[in-house]
Image (tube, rainbow, N blue to C red; front, side, top):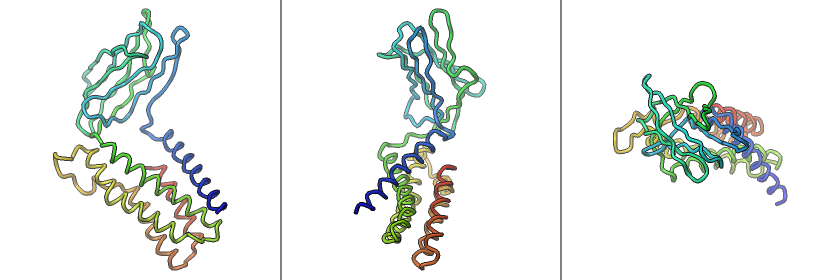
Length: 249
């Protein structure tokens, strides 16, 4: 029992580290920063993806009073801007959402005592709009994706436990990725593409090659392991390949 607890805790720690690294290195990770105005901190987060229903809302957090701001964006070389309003701790501004897949380039301009602060300081941030994804779908996607990744790591650690539960763990892993691919991802992508109640998207638009590749790896790995063929080697290679693909998603 003690070994089981250690292996599960180790799996969770590694999963957390993998998830954190994946998040901060993702191409869609927001542009964030903090700077000072007269000793007060001003923090901002400029998203690269929006799944909002009607407007994309951006909030600047600060305790300093008297700062004004506006959001400036370009779409098809045409300039737009919207004034930010003062809230309890900072400013808030909104941009109307566009159709799924459409993009704008935007930045925030703050003003205080005749001084202008551009966020970010150079260039603009590209914001891509996608359809609104219900919270329940997001939660299910998170559970099956990270549940599957947890089982990938735990299956590898089972090699240190004389492979007692290896077959059980790889079946669970394969089942999680199977459900993710045939149910969760197609449903999530239908909302993301704005297809729900609007049109029937092509099947290939609902599937994701990276997740399908992971599923294929684990189906093949499961067959080999159940036939007692190079169990340790197959588990290590399949797990390592899964983690690499996960970082490329």
